[in-house]
Length: 197
Length: 197
DNA sequence: TTTTTTAGTATCGGATCAATACCACAGACC
DNA sequence: GGTCTGTGGTATTGATCCGATACTAAAAAA
Image (cartoon, rainbow over all chains, first blue to last red; front, side, top):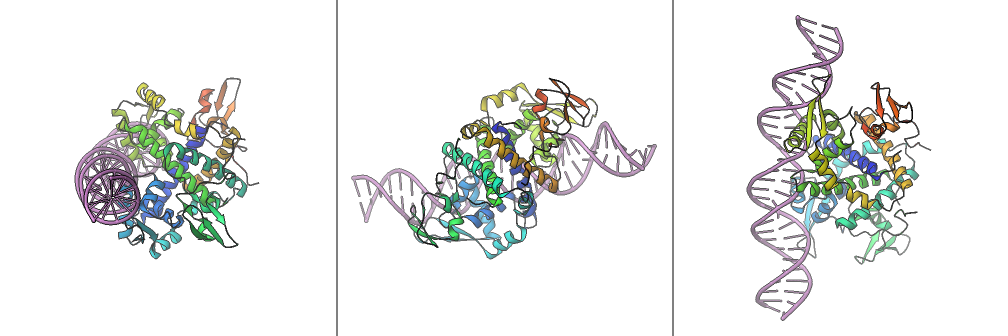
């Protein structure tokens, strides 16, 4: 087995290409492109600090103008809802509409992936996640832009009680389910990145 | 750390999106799109049984018509050379031109990735490669199309002597360097896929 | 020979995507 | 307050991708 990291890059690219084809297939009934499916999947996961066009653009690695057009399309199709932020009236908040949620749960874009990873032990998945997350984190250091991790592994997330967490970055309370969503400001705690060893 | 395989899918997608941006940046000087950079990288690695438009289309998950157009562009720019196969006159063989090789070595599209993975131990890389390769292999079972692995880990590749290998699929000899290239007919040996455990 | 399959190309139209310009709001500085 | 600058988002334009379809040529099969 080659140890060259380029092999890993090759695999990541190729897996992404295949899933891109899958997303194309998934979306073809509704006339959606792969990027639209990806956007819907992001909105399903984004927490309430990260459900904006800007965050989505950073997540997808596209420009805000490009993403804005995709969001217009999703809005016209009734798959998402857009509403103005209460405090900062410039920002637009996004959420899945009931139709959008129904689309995701019916088409389940990740189903093929779930099947393909069915026989891989949780340990192996965890281990690989740790490695890839480290790479992602490093890439961001050179690229700018947030790594988008879940709150539960973030340095800013503090557990107050059984059910209540607190985000010291935004200064707001988080419910348990909220800590499983992804945030653009996440900074991983030590121990959740693989070390050089 | 979440053990849900969907987190892994998310990471793969995101890393691919970032590298896509990187490829866009790399290619912008030459007016190349990300997919063109990916095509050149593929041709750098493909062995002599897999350097065809059809193989590239399968590799990228695109249709042959689409890939044909990209190849025309790369040809016009002088980055690749196309020539007819000796035996089967339908198939077109592809190789990097000196200009294409120079472009890759000067721009080195994988440089950012190399930097990001610098501090990750060879063991961790190997382990992750093994997991991702298993997923890729499974995805292909449902998707059709070859997984594209290196000859050295293929069941058809037999070592004849110190320097000479033999491919029992194509019935041809392979040199040492050739066994490090990727082939569309590769079938991984047991032991090179991670097991359920 | 005839038919079918396969590798590749040509053409068309829809859609992505970046770039640029633009608008609205927020915050800073005076 | 008033001005300036930065930021979040949209509108528009043009280049390019990409799939779909139709097509050619060669191989393989019947």
